[in-house]
Length: 436
Image 1 (cartoon, rainbow, N blue to C red):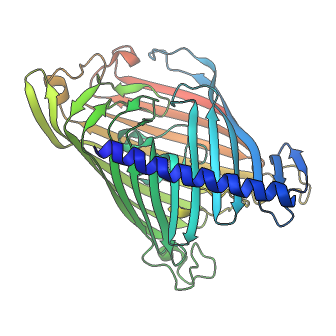
Image 2 (spheres, one colour; image 1 turned 135 degrees about the horizontal axis):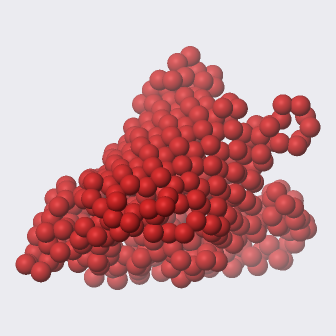
Image 3 (cartoon, rainbow, N blue to C red; image 1 turned 45 degrees about the vertical axis):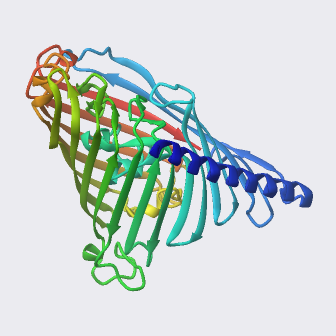
């Protein structure tokens, strides 16, 4: 019943949005708002009206990796196309935007889509988005893999990150002093491995910068206490009236360290807590996930696993060339124009190098032993507790290109076969990412 109501609500909203798009398109064609077509290797293909709206943009993202796996790793070293997206997005006016991202690989998504949504911003404190949307509860997954200073997510994102067909209301007050996110998902989406999530979900998230100035300045921009004003904290909760899916967790290079069969429970609940600081070119954040499954079906009956599914991480990153971080969640869709501050090859200055960034991260996951005792997984596939240390160096020569060198050290308490039953792995990756 809940799923049908959610799908109906999403369908009505999408239909309304499509009707609006059709009407706007007719107006555009009739009044000849578009002035021409422009194409470049930095902006993609763009067509827009004389005042900047309406605007249509065709771009994409390619991430090519060279992986040097540990000799104990079950995978083979070599080149791999990790991501390949074709993106069509645009705006009808400053308040209405849309995005359609097709996944050319189609491995970690469903429907061949990474995202597909339409958004209307009535006020800064009220924006409504409907369609296939990512539903982040924490810091890292809300930033997105193309923007985080690492190749691959840490353990918390694997536990509660998902993409689903749904409706979101979000907004911010006083330039990010307070931000919120309320989302209803229909249960027609997928997790980070592209595995189907059949369970509808409701979630709520709040992020606050409690010491921001009244004028909204932070990160040392017009602020007398830049470090304090950059402190942020937040919390989120998600609930599903059923749970039908996997509970798989991997290290940043996607080696599964906890791998279950498809689980069936009457409900699930996840809490997500975060704390961090934006201090100009420095950012540090910590986040923790604590999850529960209720009335989980096992061979011996139904069991409750309350607050026994946990993961946490601490990450530090530094823009060596001085660019500033901005972790306000409402701004995630806005593309940064100041990264790098001095693009490589512009010849404005002999020191124009692009942006250089270094980052380190530690992550730990501890999942209840009852999963093994109830035969939902076993020690050849999973470890009960595991941890990963990641160190990365990023070079952004231009706003479109990023080169990343990263090393990941993983330690598992048990000896899953993914590491040749030895519980240890040290692997490296070199990534070239191009984004339009």
